[in-house]
Length: 198
Image (cartoon, rainbow, N blue to C red; front, side, top):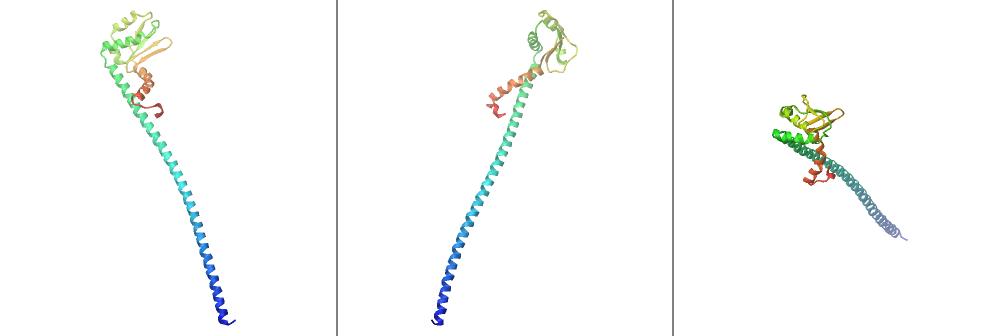
């Protein structure tokens, strides 16, 4: 073999080998690139899912806080409405003409058993409104006598009857306080709310 042929043979083999190395390198590069791309895509999807999960949790917490704040605001509004209704009712009772107001007090006193003796306490304003004959008229229909105390109590109206063993409280303050729980369902009906919204 001539040197020229040997040289061409070596070059040809080297060229084939170089082409094979390049081909293998290109294939490895494509495989590595595809593998890296799949790995990055998987990491991206995992990060995206984690972020979405955190966002959902944050949104859930925020909505929970918002719902709680709304419930508190609704409760405040309902309480203000109830307070307003009760204040207006007290105002209307307090502003009744004397004869109507005394008739109301008489009705409430008629509910007290007539065998109870006691002292009737009223507000300072009511002490001025109640004439002396009111108690006398009241006692005519009772077995036990009730007397009107000269000492006023701090109530908005109505009375407190103190007997030997206990007190009977027909003050407007207590009547209104006892009405409050019954007004809440009524208000819910009027406002078309459910108890779950509180």
